[in-house]
Length: 214
Image 1: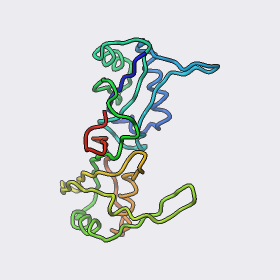
Image 2: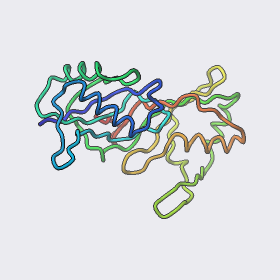
Image 3: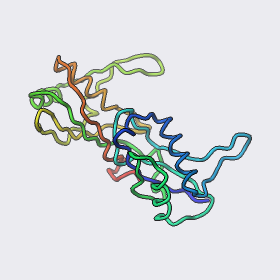
């Protein structure tokens, strides 16, 4: 047996399928590919797939990760070719390799975000300059207020046309997750007017040392 880590893109209409539907889609694709997939043992054997970090519904990604276990070693180029031949439009495997990190090594993710609205740049800067950005977060013990100001790393922002283009780094993984929608909702509340999210795209999943999660 050998484990492989597959990095794939999830774009276009595929951004609207849930994580559960993605799992089902990938299972069907692996079966159609003819790859020698490993199945769990027991009364209800199932194909082994693992996604270290789920993606929010409606978001695109250029760096999704799926772990696949095969019963025998297969050339990485063959895995890529056979899998892509079986995947639907909007899902595309871009690289295959041996896992280098564990899922618990994930500490954050980088996103490209496009917000539609006029004169958002100054508002955004003022929003980020607040000492606190309090949001209500659901926990196992109920709801509580959390300050997300120190958790947002805004790497860049620029106005283009009638939209604001942002690059954000947010916590992800076992240490805690901050969804892009939480940040946008807080910004919308601060702005006091509706702000339409045109695009959310995950472009990197990284570990504590800043290296790509591979």
